[in-house]
Image (cartoon, rainbow, N blue to C red):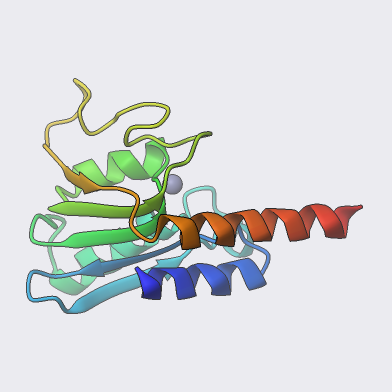
Length: 147
Ligand SMILES: [Zn+2]
């Protein structure tokens, strides 16, 4: 999660909402890392989780990531939660709940919904304070700049 926070910091410094994600295999090896690139790529799907899932699937040569753990600094949105379920990710670990678009438990619960064919294990609230402060600082700075 510390590494995900560092990736998020890079995104934040480049004008993106700071979100970072890493994927670890069953042996604990880092197999994918990504940060939010939505603005830079002008791609509405370029969230950190989607980019990390794609990189991990490419590296492992399978879309089934059931042996993998995905760490992300912010609770995934509906798009990413859907992709995480589609990839059969073994364990999701995230930092802070997202009261606006959180789709793991806060606004909706995609993994436990009738549309999900995968029972996802989830641990939320890891390094929660650091993840929250990073986002709050970024949004505060942006508000300050646009005044
Ligand atoms: Zn997302």
